[in-house]
Length: 288
Image (cartoon, rainbow, N blue to C red):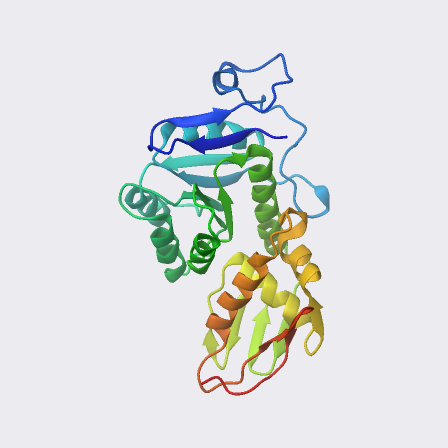
């Protein structure tokens, strides 16, 4: 079992649930909340081939100061230096005015001014592609779909396991590090769709298509195997790694979101569903 975080139903201070406490050398902060010391077996964040990179820079956006302090402490051990914002407007200002880009955003759904969904939409409409992980007490499938459709790369419900959160963050940063490492430069194309993995530029019919990190990863998998069936489990592991935790509904959501971005009226559809098996990149009928 794992340590979990939740926020009270009345919107009060956070409630940390101690599932187990096995270490005797707890820090005062972790003892207060009944959580394991950050000196865990999780280890530092690594990049491709297991080599350690420079520290990453992230932003936590949440109106709960105790949660912000806790995550800042935990992620510092994991190699991520978090800055903090307590509302949407502050977050947008920090992102816009920062001299160095943020490599990760942890975004609460329920903020005093804007919803996390609205903030995510604004980031994506501005062309920003850093991983965004939505934190929320909501757990309905429709909420997951709304968050992912807004451009979030991942979604985790409270109460959440800190181990799962850190695993999801590591997976997101590994993908970013792999892309920036430049170890695999390809020019992929199918019909009138092209992808340059050096610049991460995707173009269809002469028009550039902005994609989030996971949308890009998913499309790259399909472009590498055109006119062939890509099985669901293969796509899940390629895009989400071993951290998708069996939630294959995420794949359907991202396929739908990717279709919205690359399939336009008057042009052939490109992503075909092979019912019960997976998806195929193949030209279909003109989209109405």
